[in-house]
Amino acid sequence: MTSAPLPDAAPANWVDRFAPVRLRPWLKLGRFDRPAGIWLLMLPGWQGAALAAAERGQGPNLSLLASVFAGAALMRAAGCAYNDIVDRDIDARVARTAGRPIPAGQISVREAWGFLIGCSLAALMILLTLPPAAIALGVGSLALVAAYPFMKRVTWWPQAWLGLTFNWGALLGYAAQAGRVETPALLLYAAGLFWTLGYDTIYAIQDLEDDALAGVKSSARRLGAAAPRAVAGFYAVSLGLTAAAGFAAKLSPLFLIPVAAAGVQMAWQARRVRVDDPALALRLFKSNSATGLLAFAGFALAGLAR
Image (tube, rainbow, N blue to C red; front, side, top):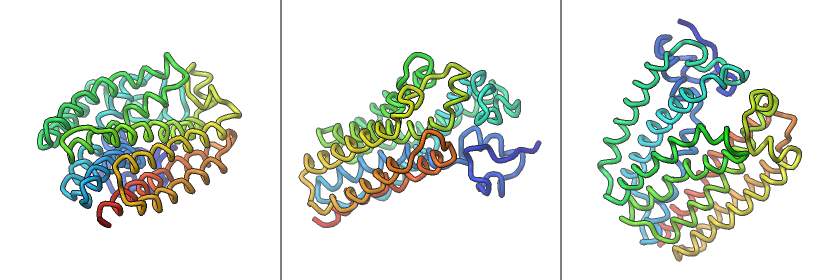
């Protein structure tokens, strides 16, 4: 069994370079050849944990950050497998996704379900080590995950649903540190929603033509030529809500320095993005790991400075 790098994976990604050939379809099913999604799912959890710790005058709990990382990697893999099971017919008609393991015939639907269940059970074992509030939030996220693949069929704004889903970790990470959800966590969750609206609209630019042919809805298709301006607006709201979360937690103003740097990075994305350049859209999308890390660094700095 052989496979080539998928269109939205780096040509020199570690899976295609180093993983055993028989394992590559499974790693690609979980998107381990495209780690940007792991970062984007993990970082809201890190931000929530760091925000709760900083509010209490502490630096981030490294053990909790490790748990959030492992849980995010496993749940992202499970979510991607579920998405590919549901979307296998659509994926086969879209150039960027036709080579994915299920539509390419490398992994059967039954095998993909087994992969999904295995990853979910491993993630559950991590979740059960956290406080009860975090466990309840983790279980509650399953409804969002289950509904997401269907959103592109019923609304022009599946990116908003992805924002609700991908940023749930902000609430979970905060609750894992603080034992409950408070106003700063809700503001951070809202900030993440608008951040995702921005970066996933950029991501959807890659598939404008194929999505139109397949009848798939997206914010990029709905916005058309106005997408860059909308991305700028989404990012501006996200930045304001992130700052509001820090102020609501009564953090040292030092947190604003990295957060302002994140704002500059967002502005750079919005200024450069073009609806007629899908390759650039992918590069800008991937740069959001830096955006999220800067926001996390702001909260961590505030906690360590107390």
